[in-house]
Image (tube, rainbow over all chains, first blue to last red; front, side, top):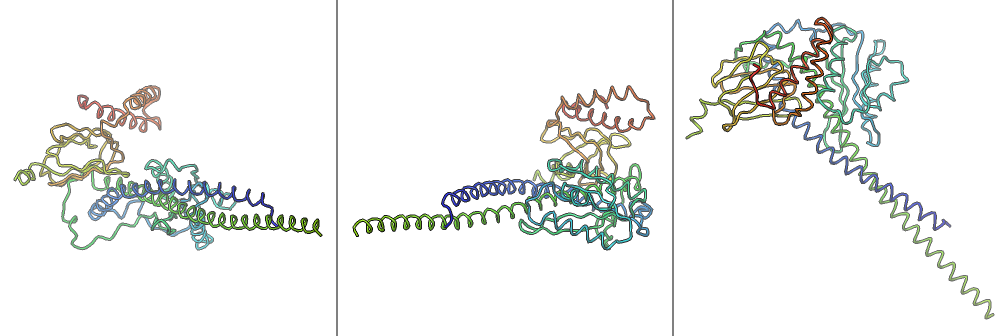
Length: 288
Length: 145
């Protein structure tokens, strides 16, 4: 028969765990809201940027820009965006799996990695790939400056031909429950196709200093903006995943507490019954 | 009635940074720190695109002057609207003047210690310009231009 004290202790311990998972869920929910607002707030800049870039690229010799150069792929660079912490369901693993898939598809080529988040650093540390940079403990620094830092590294690798193609692997936020691991090719840049007869094309701008120089700046900012956007999506996904995982954990804990309480009550009843039987049996023995 | 009259006298000004929309308003005149020099925009400006250098964007809104410190970016001016895509944009009122002043003094003294062909020169000079722009935006002081 299970010991009453032991059951009581397990109940207390599960209750503690539930309190923690519940708190984590609430924190994740608050952070998720902020992360979603950040994604929304970043949208106007990004869309205007693409519009302007497309419009200028159509009227300058954009083909020659180094960030657009296509060459035979011998080396690839993968930027992997994971979190620093676990307890967030499949968030980190699905990214690592996606990254590995790319690595397998490119067997025989030089693989370089730029890792963001402790989880990816831990995973790839003992593997035979060249890590050009790793960024950990970045939770509070999901900002444009960090995107610039990553973008600078990425563009340097690409322009110096250390990497012929750059992939960006991150979680896209679908909704609180669903995150979609994405692998997008970041470089060489692909300009959106120019739509026939679209309005902005009819505008003839005056440029200072020159269309090419402005395009150069815009292309670089575009890479930054792309990475920044991925970082924001990833952050929102992480909080969403953690919220879902912690919600499930809290529910499981509640179920477990109910089960244990039932077990406890049964054990207590059994103990009382045993005691009663003993008393009755004792009395019977005396009378007899 | 007043609205229709306003259209020809004002244009839409939007200032965007990667993280948010900083300003979205109608103005009658705005000046920008372009790489090839400060320039002003009035309604009906010809289509024009230029890069920005660290400096202050100024415009009037509701009779009150506004100053926004920007670090770099690009301006697209069209007859009826102007859009600024800035790397950073900070309204003068939000500037932490003490920090900006410290940065400015730091850069000043570091620049004094190295020569012009040092690798750090451009970076420090840029940082100095940004700090100066932030201080100017906070004071609404444009005398140094």
